[in-house]
Structures are given as C-alpha cells and as structure tokens.
Amino acid sequence: MEKVFERILYSARWVLAPIYLGLSFAILALTIKFFQELFHVLPHIFETSEMDLVLLVLSLIDISLVGGLLVMVMFSGYENFVSQIDLKEGDQKLDWLGKLDTGSLKNKVAASIVAISSIHLLKIFMNADKIENDKLMWYVIIHLTFVLSAFAMGMLDKLTRHNH
Image (cartoon, rainbow, N blue to C red):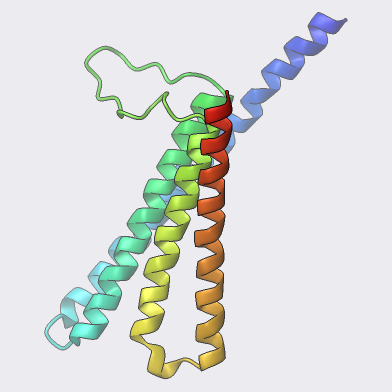
C-alpha cells in the first residue's frame, strides 16, 4: 500500500507540466504585446518626443525582462519538479539549464522583480510632474520593499549554503 501511494504521489508531479506549458503562452502574449507597442510607435516616430520614445524603450525592456523571467521559471521549474529536459546531442542547450535549484531560482526571480520594478520606477520618475507626491512615495516604498526582500533572500540563501 505504501509503495502504491508513493508512486501515485511521485507521479502527481506531472500535474505541473501543463502549468509550465501554459507559461509558454504567456511568453507568446508578451511577444504580441511587444510588437504591438513597437508597431504602434513606428509610423509616428518622427513626431514622438524623446521622452515618449525613452518611455517606450523602457516598456520594451520591461517586457523582455518579464519574458526572460518566464523562461527561467518555466524551464527551471520543469527540471526541478517534473523531469529533466532531454535534448539531442548538437541541440543548443542553455548554459544554466539543470544548474538552477529552487534557492537559486528564487534569487533570480527576486533579482528580476527588482530589475522590473526599477524600470517601472524610472518610468514613473520620468513622469513625476504628473504624479501626486504621496503616490511617488508609495512607489518608492514598494520598490525598496522588493530590494530589501531580494537582499534578505540572497543573504539567507548564502547563510544556509555556507552552513551546509
């Protein structure tokens, strides 16, 4: 009975596989949004102010960072919790594939969130004259919370790795 239960429990990890596949659709959605933003500005590029162009570029960078984060979570999560990704010899394999454990993945996700938050905060500061001071203060507080959380997670990970 115990062996059957353990086999069923172990097989249940495959329930996660469709979730990781679903993340690929999120990447597709981001790609569509990326090019929608790009094609929206191209016909008006000569009328677009430098500030608006910089804001658009920051938005595009934001989208690419979120896309990279999705790829990292999708592949690492699949490899850590479902199954190893088997690629044929000669296929391109991402350097970090199979090397990110859950602790490293958490730190990379936290660092990505800080980077995304930084870009969002920069965009807000570029429009600071249109935003109320109390809202600006809350944006900074939220960003600092992300920074401190990422720092604390990194320090905890370093301490636990050092003690083992």
